[in-house]
Amino acid sequence: MTYGPQRPSPGAPLPPRQQPSTPPPVVLDVGADAKVKALAGGSVAGVIGLIAIFSALTGQTTGGGGTAVAVGVVGLVFLGIGLLPVIAWKKVARPRRLVFDAFGVRWDDPQGRPWAVAWAELSGVGISRTRQRRVRPADYLVRRTMVRLDLFPADQGFRSRHQEMEHLWEFHTVKNGYRLPLGSTPRYIPVIERAMRQYRPGAYLGIKDEGFTVGLV
Image (cartoon, rainbow, N blue to C red):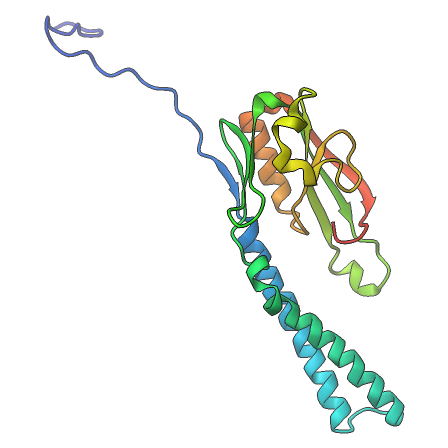
């Protein structure tokens, strides 16, 4: 009896070589998340608006006719906010995905402004975030955190090659780079970090806190 690796017999086919495995792409389904948030927010605002209007019309408010009118106006405002997702549903519900893979970073937005950037074209990729200022008691229970992806070109010819990204150039407060707003979804942060450490750890710039939210981005 012999031990150790056995040599293949003459003429026998050689075993296939093991190919290095490529990790699967990391995908953020931004469009699906936006639909859920729009429906949830619109439903809450719409219900509040209907309750306020019903209260004003049925005399369930205190303080006289002026108060009833004010409550009715507020109800109409909330009802209008609740209807916004329905009015803009085509835009809100369009498919959008942020993808990290072996090639680089790409924004899949068939009905909008798609783009794709190779890793070699980027000198750095970072995450910036701002947190909602705490003003009301409710802000201590639910505090919105806005998340953005910041991309910094590796050469001066980047802008001329990627005119499709011009609307993101120095957007908001970023300088000499591009900023892609991802909305109020803090759970994107660890996913992006994992993708960067998986594909381009040397280019990952980490998380930059920019204080409190300004506007809707």
